[in-house]
Image (cartoon, rainbow, N blue to C red; front, side, top):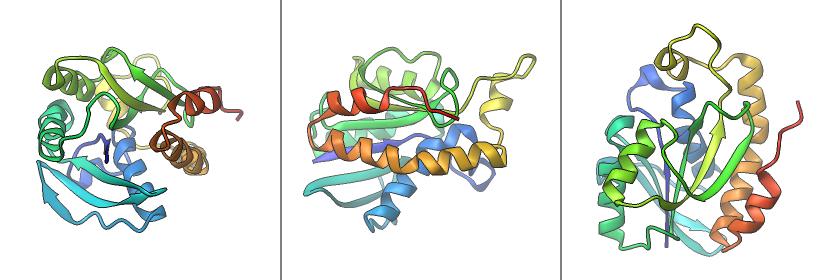
Length: 191
């Protein structure tokens, strides 16, 4: 069994913001595999289903970004998954261009408060992750204002067009081919 967590903030005001791209990916996966995201457990909205014969729990923590680790810890403890190999966390990254994806098996928080919280609750930095590029913060912008801002129509189209690749990367990771997913998708997106 795998737990796939998309990071974001609850409440309508945060929908479709850069910081909520993790929620958007979970919604796209749920749509693709007809997984109902209706249960509220472990400080998250979750859905149970199967992808390529692999049982999955999709989760959108409802703790706000900087407390995401609380929900992730509860999910891992309840479902007893191996957090190093059966947890996939999907989140925004301002160091990547819009539509670019970066898959990693471990690493630091890189200034991301949601990942910082997960690292704190896990006590280590080894877990699968997909960083979703949301573009670099323009000069003079406040970081919080930027990540809590909405995508332009052009950027949203790029993200939507690349969502199939993100879903394919998740499928490969669930099929125990994270290295293959890294080789295939950790490249620049042509614009």
